[in-house]
Structure formats: structure tokens, C-alpha cells
Length: 506
Image 1 (cartoon, helix red, strand yellow):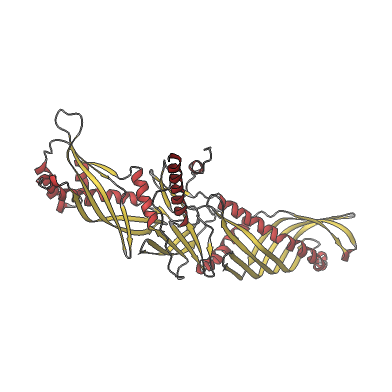
Image 2: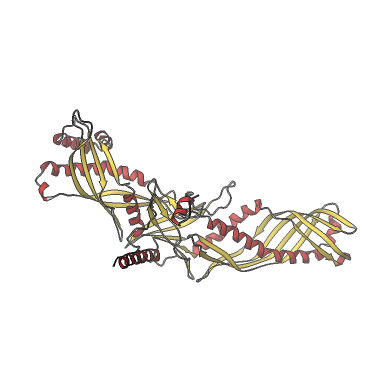
């Protein structure tokens, strides 16, 4: 029976893990509006990139029949793209595949130095090259790698430049320009052969950047948040869905919680560029991870309580006088409040609540004693409402006390001191403990977004089982910054990730 029981246990753990991996904690939906904005932002990014882009020298050899020269070596160096225009560019979803990129009627102005060598001939100078009728189409295939990073590759690349006009500059420019037109054909032929390999190479660079993303984010001194993809992107005609794990872990333990995520569906909307659905599982795992890591505990002295209560003059005198009635304040007092179970998360339409089962112990230090002694100990449940906001690209939560209930044994119901302590403890929670918690919650949870992309015009709604963030995007890049696809605020946690994947830590 022993091996059979162990086998059942392992199978049970496997089924739990499989269930957890089936549904995301976070869903991100990219709409057509985001793609349309991406075209405009992409042009801005490209404009800055090409100004600093180093283009390799173009070398080769040609037979110049119009000059009766059988063999000439050429070298175009110091190639710079001075201006370009792609007025007809579009991005569109290809269901089940990826994103199609299409541009036509593009133009570009390029300057370069040139040098030619033949058996009895050698010269050098400068030239301007004007390209028109630039056409490109390709499909960006979106998937994921083994570590849950997004991945892409370029497929069905086709690029062509229809016309090229060369204008030579220099002492003999008038002579060379009379022969420019026959030289444009080999330039076009070589250029068209190079375009797709160059574009594919840039796509590989972008894919390498995506593969280096850190999908584990340190939230605070207690927890990590896993943003890895649990499945390849889901692409329809109108949007792209990313299913992210969205699970919190204690810093010292990257084991999945035993409770499983529930499926949820984002509403069919297209007014915003991006929709982020954050499930109840996300918040439950945050509650569980912080509880496991010992984050839900606070100890306050009488002086610290007074400092918090002093901000509300209507209650401070009343509360402190009650404490003085019950206990002798000539002796040091300390109040320790700690959660006894993970706070219970509830997401219902228009309402986000958190029930916190906890215990409170009041300590004093008698004269001539070296250690604090407990005076009163009791359990209670604090029911709170959770407010949500987006500040600085982070999801910020804040707590407000709705209801406070003591959980007393029957034998203690007649203890007048304990019953009177209920009002005191409720005031301390409201005016001292929750403000401390809200201060820590101001750190917030970083929302997944590419670097230099801000969330604007954001709105938050609470649905059954998930929170929906509707937002637009804004791309900003300073002159000193290079385009980057690393997610904002994600720290370098390679060692932790390696330990989780069973790899040796560096």
C-alpha cells in the first residue's frame, strides 16, 4: 500500500500543477488600435535608430558594359540614411499566426562615399541615392520559448525597391552623372537581394532581446511575481491575447500554491489599445505568499500608537483614556497584531474586499521584569474594502476598514475588559495599522509593459473573479536612450530563476 499511496500523492500533485498551468493569473489583450498606434510609434523609433545605425560597407564587382569595362571593383562606405518615408504602412492580425506588416510607396534618401577600381582606372567620390517604390511585406510569428519568454521570427519576407536614382557629387560629378542611369540597375539588384536578410537579422536581434527578459519581478522584501507566458499568444482577427502566469511566490520558496486559478474571459471591447485582466488568483497568491513570508505582522508601542492617533483629535483622547482605565500606563505597553491565516480575497462586480483573520496581543512589562508579559490575547476578523488606482505604471491598492469582529471563546464573553478592548482595537486598526499597510501598498505591483511605453487614459473595473484595466499606450524615447524591449522595473533575478528551473545557480 505504501508505494501506491506515494504514487497517488505524486499523481495528485501533478494534476494540481497541470490545472494551475491551464489558466492565467493575468491576461493582456492587444487590440487593433494598439497596432495602429504602433505604426506611428514605430516610425518615431526607426527615425532615431537609423540616425545612429551603422551600415556596413557595400562591396562587390560589376561589368560596366556601357563603359566597355569587363570588370570593376566597387566599395560604398559611410552609408547614411538621411531621410525616409513610409506613408502606407499597416499592421494587421493574422488569426492563429501572428502580425502582418505591409508597407508600400516608401522612399529613402541615402548618402555614401564610393570608390571604384579597374585594371587601368581608379577613382573615388561621393553620391546621393534616392530610392522610391519601396515595398515590404512579412508576417511576424509570435510564440514562446521554454522559459516562458515571448519569442518571434519573421516569415514570408518580401522586399523590393522599384526605382533608384544616383546623383554623384565632386569634381567630375557632371561626367559621372551622364553614366548614372546604367549604374542604377546593378545597385537595385544588389539592394533588393540584401533587404530581407537585413530585416531578418534585425528581427533576430529583437527576438534575442525578448528572450533575455526577466519574467520574475521582485515586488518587495517578501515576494516575487512571475510574469512568464503559460501558452503561446492567442491571435484572432481583432486582437492578440497574452496569457501570463501572474503568481506571487515567497522569496525563499518558488513552489506553486495549492489552490488553482479559475478561467475568466475578457469582455469583447476595442475602444482601448490594451486590456489587462487580473484574476482573483493573482491577488490570492499575493495574499498567500505574503502570509507565508511573514509579512502580515506589526508590533506597536503606546508611543507609536499615539503618534498615529494624534492625527485624529476626535478619537485620541477617548481611546487613550479607555486604555488608561483598563491598564496602568506607567508600565510599557506593546500591541502585536498578526494575521493567523492568509487574507481572504473576494472580487465581485463593483466590489473588491479583503477579510483578514488575525490575532491581537497586548503586552506590558511589569516593574523589575526583563520581558514583556501578555495582558490580553484575542482573535478577530477585519473586513476591508480595497481601492485600486494606477500610479506611475503600477497598480496601487489601498485598504479601508468596513467591519471589525472579535472572535471570542464562550468563556470570555463575560470579560468586560476584553469586550471594551474591541472598540479600542478597532480604532487602532483604523487609524494606525491600516495607514501603515497603505504606505507599504503604495509600492504597488508593476504592470507588464515594454520599456519607454507608458499607460495613459487608464480605467479600472471590478468584475466577478477579475479586475479589468482598460488603457491606452504612449511611447516616449529621449535622445540619449536606445530602443529597448526590457520590461520596466524588472530586476536581474537569474540566480533565482535558475534555482527554480533546476539549474545550478551561478
